[in-house]
Image (cartoon, rainbow, N blue to C red; front, side, top):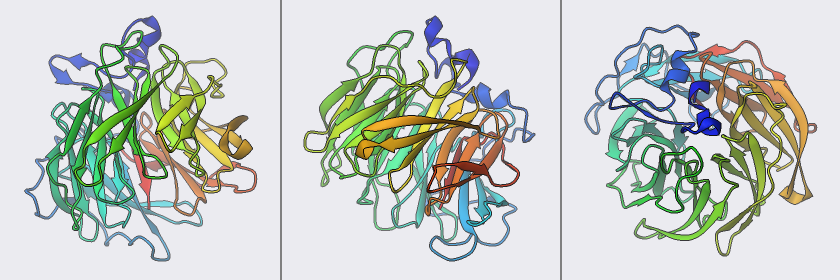
Length: 410
């Protein structure tokens, strides 16, 4: 999301807008980048269900998950913005050095701005972040598009797979709604089983309506939590595991105008960390697995030193010892020591992100590398993670990828 749209403090929505009747959420931020100079190419229509996906000069088949040697990396982008990509970027990375090697593009998926993988590693899911929102499934063994399903809302910007592997959860930013789709044994998606639109509380200061930004499952699998930037609320739902329906059980409210964007759980399951995009703060949250209730703590600093900054996303190391935060504007990665079994964050400092506007970050499965997708510079940067100190050390040169908004290492 671009600085021009960050006027929540001045009375307008910070994250999305309609322009000339078309969907324009965050697109101009990528166009402003100018790096990874790619000519805008219209996204091709998605192939019919079950048809082979088109690939833009892919090299050899991508390495499979769990095999030694290079590991797969997928990169999300926008296909309908100037300078954007033409589909999902295909690459691999060396888990020892962090070196990324590109291998082409999977076309046929429009505006795949966020990616997730099924727990069994065989299917990739992407949002189609457009006004008529959809989610798409891709079989990874042969890069075959398995089909797309409507989310029933506008501008889906996040999705995740329930730990059971049976349900796909997605958040529609434009309509402020959350959707559930069933996942069959092949990884394909069925027709939507739930659609919940956030209607209360009313929008926060400067917001025009609800803006669901994330939908995830609690570590115990008992509840689904939806983070809504527009209503300054995190909603807790109970998921019916047989029917795929959602029942609201609790709401947690930030201070007005905080603009909550992204929630990440500590591996212990009793605490989570919330990035507030609009007021440039973070918060430690207590979570009660029995009720699904989240309690949001006091705002804490992001390490931005008071400059223009929009925190994007937390990740936490598997041992729960350290947390990292992507700071857009300050263009840094904040480092936190996690203390008191997850109940406390202590800011250790920041390191340069190595790119402009780090939109999303992810740890490699072994925890040895951290990847940052830098939207405006059109790059993915990689860092070695020191497991003992939480230190971050750059791993070589940035990898160029047009309007990189999501990096998913497997």
